[in-house]
Amino acid sequence: MRRVAGNGAAVEDYLTGLERLYDSFPVNQTTVSLPHEQFERVRGRRDARIVDAYAEVRNDDNEVLHVENDGAMTLPGETVDLSQHIESQVCEAVEDAAGITCSVEGIESATIAGLRDEDAPDSETCYHLILVFEASYLDGTTSEDAYWKAEPKQVASLSA
Image (tube, rainbow, N blue to C red; front, top):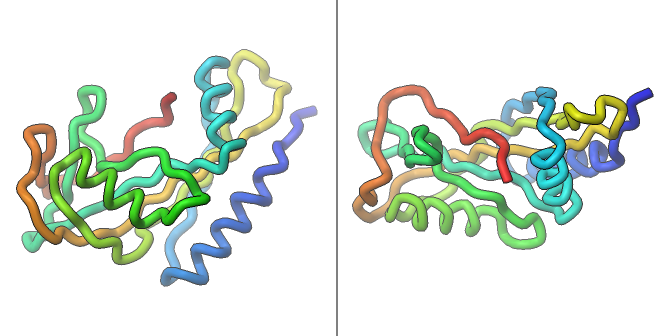
């Protein structure tokens, strides 16, 4: 029998808190199997109260900011620590990755990823939260690895 990690309730509690701070937003859920080593890294991040957060930054032409990430164009973002102000961390990630400043307006979406160890199918399911924040461009010129695109957005895949 598969054991479900206790942090599923913690993810739900955190989402409830976010819903109090922001207008409603869609919450998706997915399940992914990861190789053992990658699963252990993600599980360690969960235990440290860390989530992946991305920014969907739009300019005046309604284009979305993308940055190069391991050869793919994705939304800027990073792993953030829930014990610190999450909006500040998201804006710092955008500035570091793209060279521009932004302002967080709300949450575009949240995804609860149920992660399984593909090498140990009977092990616990680890829940990981992925947030995409709505943000507006404030100032700056994009770095050489950042581009404004009208095409659909993409977040980076789970890694380290």
